[in-house]
Amino acid sequence: MGKIQSIIIFCKKPGFILSLILVVFFLKGLFLATLSPMFSGQDESRHYNTIQFLAEPKEKNWEIIKIKVKNREKERLETYNFSEEIKKTIVAAQLNIERQGNYSKALFSGGYNGKNEAEINSDQWDPYNKEYPPDIAGKRTKAYHLAALQIEKLFGQQSILIRFYLIRIFSILLATAVVLISYLVFKNSGFSKKISLAITAIIAFQPKFSDYMSNINYDSLLILSFALFTLGAVLFLKNGFNWKNLALMSGSVVLGLLTKGPAIALLIVFLLLISFHIYQGVRNKKISKKYILFFITLVIALLFVFGQKYNLAQIVPWGPKDSPTEIISSASEYLSKSITRIPSSSTNYWGNLDWTHDNIDKYIIWIIWAAEFLAVIGLVLFFRSDKKPSWLPEKKYIIFFLIMIIVLQFGIRLADWSAFIKTGSLKLGTPGRYFLPNIIAHMTVVFTGLGIILKKEKYFRNILIGGLILMFSFSMYLIFDIIMPRFYL
Image 1: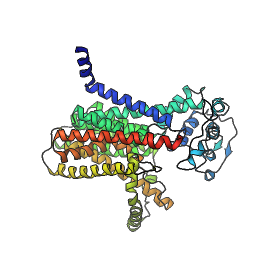
Image 2: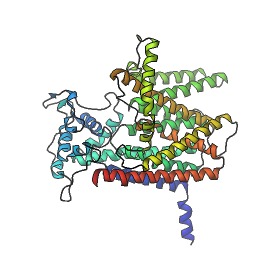
Image 3: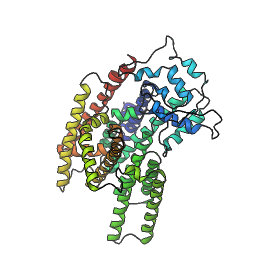
Image 4: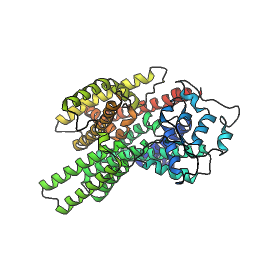
């Protein structure tokens, strides 16, 4: 009995529960990575081609063929300017069949191996881009691709199947780190360890996050940079500026800027935090000129990194010659057309798929929307009151999380507006995956709002359990009743 009791006590420890959450999330990610056919992820073929392009020798001693990018056919990946190995693998495995319709199935072979697997493993195709311009992603920001490049080189003698799925596993490891960091953020924001574990588990089973992070895509590193920055900022709000959280925030800003454009939001929020810190220090006469000079130098360095990677003219959707009337007219037209897509962005964010065949997912989304609506009411009450429950975060944390959400939202809309001006249509769009970098901030804000509505901690814990059951059920439903039948049954 003593040993059993000791095991039970050990299993109740936060460290064990957190480890269990991380292991389950990683294994679920592995399952999703093997479940999804090659190149079926969002822009996955382009990202893997970018990695292969970076792995090429500097001296191109093969024939280069100029092909117009306009010749692409969306349903046929082999028409893109990818490496020979990627294009031949797509044809051999007949992967294009899955892209020709919402319910097109993968083709099976009669034996143990997959369709033309022996041919794919024969290593007879060059992993080089012979058609120019190569179809690659992140022409200016390649942090994720450079990291994945090490896997591509290390296992360069292995089959493309091994290299491809190892890089998918790399993305899952990054996602697992995000889940770990989310727990640290929740705990340092003011939630108890048990509540932090519950919200962490909800993130671990958020369907879109799990599915998207099991693909080859630079967003996995971008989301990690947002998580690291959020942790550093929360530690700053909790303990004040010190070298650790300053290094964590500035390092995550640089990492984000070297990964993808939306990290500009991190730079903006970081500048706001530094400005606020300097303002308080000057007002209270607790900051020296040396510290101010250091912060200014740090800001200049970060702006230099930004300037090397981004062109402000490409981000801001209007030019110096545009009149205020033209800008307002363009903004009004954009908003009138894009506002109707907000529900679609939300459903996509939570994991709803366009090719579902029933209304179960819609009912779940409605429940989530109802919870979010109540959370908004709770936040209004939260900021109007001078008191708060001891088991919820302080207002300064919620203000920070809201700023993170607003800045990223504004940046995404600005980029979408810019694309709208250039193309005359909502070509870029605002799919839900664009908002995943703020998943930690979003969850904190939502559950804080619900906590204010519920008032009592025991009710709040029951809601957390219900939320976890809902996310777990939704995730399993999408995997086994939607994704698996979609490709294989």
